[in-house]
Length: 177
Image 1 (tube, one colour):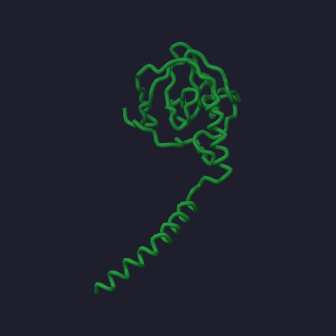
Image 2 (cartoon, one colour):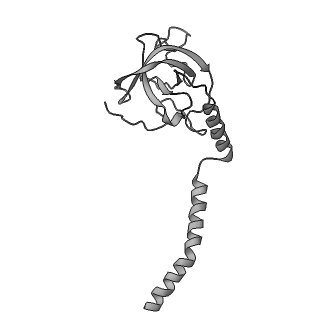
Image 3 (spheres, one colour):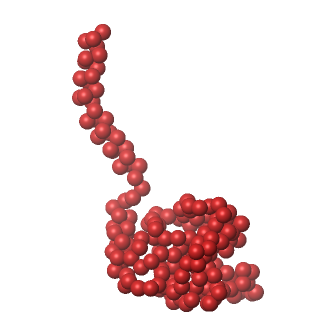
């Protein structure tokens, strides 16, 4: 019996590198980040790092039907994965997309600026605003002014993401009021 246990341990020690190699191959195969996507991620990282510092924010409009969430906001130089999903206060200025939710005729509708990127001037009020349609309580951003930065900036969090118009692309923390 002792000889069997001894030989089993030796075999496990010999097999351990092979098992680790096999695990590495499986994990690499499961990775959804291609070399091209890695290049896009690195380019985005360099683009964000080159943003001029200042007293403003970068906002990405992210419209989901029947919600009043505005989108994601971050500081210049901060990566998008650290951004905050917000509700926009129009106390001092109207938000960029101030159109009716149900347009008259062929005019633009609320949310028509989905995925546009803006420079935003304003501040976080410290309040959290609850949106019952999304069941999220998110920070309130008080807008003072804005300017369009990019009308077609592409992906937000990952190059392979697909937006379906009905859900967020990441799980949002603090989903309760």
